[in-house]
Every structure is written in structure tokens, then in C-alpha cells.
Image 1 (cartoon, rainbow, N blue to C red):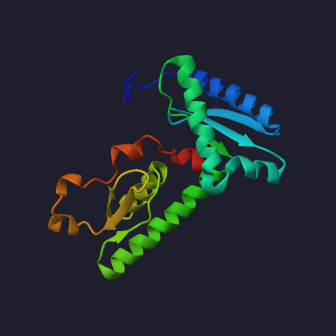
Image 2 (cartoon, helix red, strand yellow):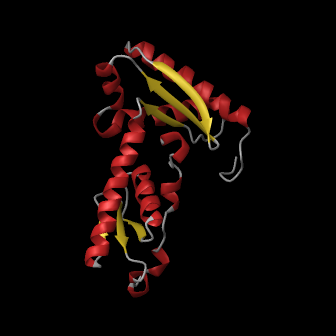
Length: 192
């Protein structure tokens, strides 16, 4: 299915069901107590794992969200294996993505302030595509520009004033959001 095609609500619910069953099995194997909440927001299936035990749930987040990312990738593969279609499923654990999104927005706003103060562009540390997408969106909301550079896993974002793009030699790379960053966009409605 092409990326620009819209899946029906039944297809999205099916993806959420498949992922929920898969994650339930993983939680049982790992002997973790957790409830799985499913939904569809802005044409994306969403899975939220919540638990009463704060210590157990933190293990499902991992350092810098590494476990959440792994759970999301495994769940997407499980959905693809059953449906034959690539999924844009989002998996979250105990609201981690909402907190991460706010932290990234703060980083982007700090960079925006620095660019406005100094007039110089600011390079941020390397980030994954989800993180870069949040940065790009925040910078654009503030009226500045941003661009991704480098190769994974060292891909990073530069924040700059719109006028500086005219002086830049590689205007063809000038984008607010690169296509790699779009795939993992987390919907505003889900995170707020």
C-alpha cells in the first residue's frame, strides 16, 4: 500500500489488535504486569502499555527509550508479517513519548533562542528520526528553519535563521522536515 493511501479504520484497528496480541505475549514471557490500551489517532494505530508498578514499567522504557523503540519495531514487524503491509504503529510505555516530546521541544526552543540571540546557526547532537521530526516541527512553529545533515546514526539537525538559507551553498538540501523524519511522526493529539 502506498504511503499516501489512507487505511480504513477497520484496517488500523486490525493493526492495533495484532500489535496488542504480540505485546501481550511478550509481556507474559517477560513476566511483566501491564495493561495494553489500543486506539487509532490521526490515521495511526496506537498502543499504550501502562502498569501500576513503577519499577517494572521503567524496564519497558529502557535507557533513553531504547526498549520502547525496540518494542515498536518488533510490533511493526509482527503487524507486517500478518497483514503484508508496512505499519506506522506507535507504541508508548507509561507516557514516555509525551515526556520525551516535551524535552525535545525544550531543546529546540533553546536552539531557537540562541539563533535569534547570535544570528549564528546551531547544530544539535545526533538524533533519531522521531527526535529530528519534533525538532523540525518546533523550529518551523517558531518561524526559523532547520535541516538534517549526516548519515544514521550520526544524523543531526541544524537550526538557522530563514535569511541564512540564501547564503548557503547547498540550497537543494534545505528542507524543514526530511522524508526520513516523517515516518515516525507522533501525532499532537496523542501526546497532549
